[in-house]
Image 1 (tube, rainbow, N blue to C red):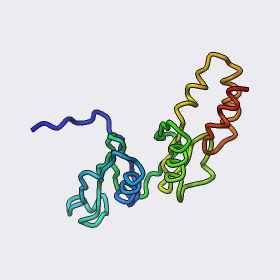
Image 2 (cartoon, one colour):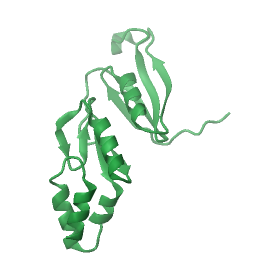
Image 3 (cartoon, rainbow, N blue to C red):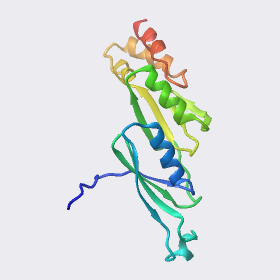
Length: 166
């Protein structure tokens, strides 16, 4: 039996919240599930310091995209250099993902559709129409959209459309 392995899988390093984070993310996105969970054994304790039976990795999927969450200790933290984009077709989707992902997160890190969740992971909750407006060949239209977008935290499609139309 051959399983097709995803060529590139994002691996997210958590202190000790890998399983909690995977459950949180899979509760928000459709077509999502928790996969295999692996545990630390006795071997390597002198290096990793994790008690036997502690979760080391959690495999999970969000909308069919595979991820791995790793409990690696407090040595590294997430930053905005890497983020996950959530493409949305409507304001209802923007509101849903924004509200759920930002719950308990860093409100100071919210700008232009970007947010930081309660684990420090950065997300961009973006309506697909924004990309279309910003790509418009008319620099006045795209410029007005950019100006309005830069003043937003959560993206408001109606305000973008108003700016686009002038």
